[in-house]
Image (tube, rainbow, N blue to C red; front, top):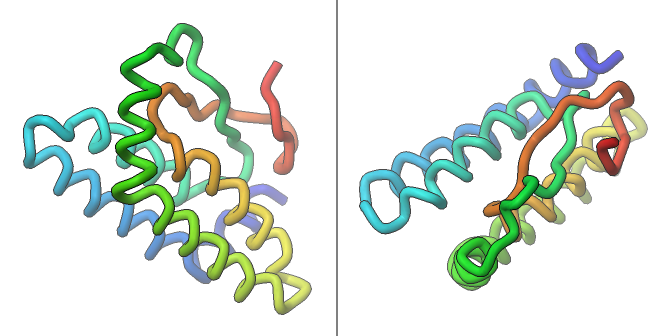
Length: 133
């Protein structure tokens, strides 16, 4: 089921969302000071490309003062706009019955798009698990 949902996701928007995150990662890596955001953007791009069967958790030891400061900067510069894009896309996907799981996956991307530093993407056994044990 996860594979089928991922294929439908990829066709109806996942490819373009992942491409956007990938291009943002390239731009961030071109500038030396924004490399941490570029790496986080690549990580989110991979997650956005194939989201079902994975979830986002806090990285052990990754929630220090530098992650917090970097996340605040990211939130003000790009995070809020990306989150609004995910909400709008989720609303558009939720109009149909088949699109409801896709809308849920889109809403699942909002926390990591707002604060990407100090997060880790891990596999799950269920497609809609919100925490990892």
